[in-house]
Amino acid sequence: MTRVLLVEDDAAIVSYLTEYLRQAGFSVESADGQTKAINLLMEKPYDLLLVDIGLAEGNGFAVCAYAKANTDIPVIFLTASGDEYSVVSGLDMGADDYIGKPFRPRELVSRMKSVLRRANNAPAALSVGNITVNPAKGLVYKNGEEVFLSALEYKILLLLVSNKGTVLTRSRIMDEIWDVAGEFVTDNAVTVYIKRLREKIEDDPQNPKIIKTVRGIGYRVDEP
Image 1 (cartoon, helix red, strand yellow):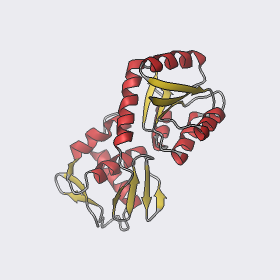
Image 2: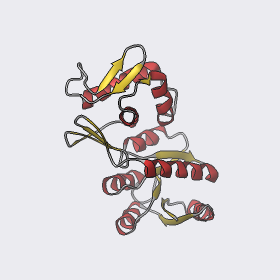
Image 3: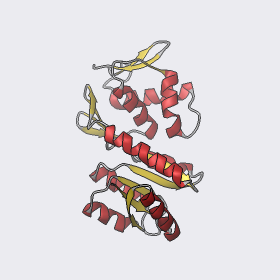
Image 4: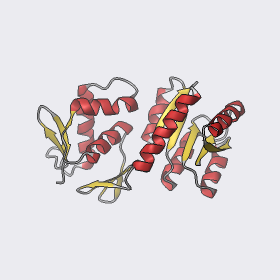
C-alpha cells in the first residue's frame, strides 16, 4: 500500500482527505506543522508527500527542502488558488507537482498516481559529459558540484538528456514545459531558457558541446 504523509494544518481538510485517500487505497498519516512533518520523515518511510505551503507552524517549503535533501520521496504542493509565486518557488525547490485549492479529490488522486509512476520509472541518474541529472531528487551536477536550475531550466535539461542523441523540435519542448510554466510558452522563451542552461552547464557557452542547435529544427544533447 502506498504510504502518504499529508502535511496540512486545516483539520477539516485532513479529516476529509484522509478518509478519501484511504478509500482510494492509500495509507495516510498527517502532520499539522513543519516540525512534526520533518520528525515523521526522519522516523518513517513514505512513498509520497502532500504539503500545504502555508502552515500554522513553519511552512511547506522547509518540509519540501528537507525531503528533497534527505530522501527520494516525491512531493506535491497544495497551494492557494492563483498563488503564482508559491507555485514557482515550490517547483524551483524540486517539487514534483502542485495542485491549487480548492481542488477535486479525484483530480488529486490522478495527479498523485502520475507523480508516483514518474518516480518509480525514473532512472537513478542520467549523464552526459560532465553533467549528471538525478531525476528522483531533481538535482543536477557539473563535475560533482550541484548546479542550481529553475524549474523550467531543469525540465528542459531533463527532457534533452532523457532523449540523448535525438533531435527535439522547439514545438515539442514548448509542449513539454507548458504544464510547469502554467501558461503559454513562446518560441522566444525556449531560446532564452536554452541560453541560460548553456551558461550554467557548458564550459564555453558560446561554443556549446552538450546542447547542440539543429538549425531550423530544434536541439539535441550529445556527448561532448
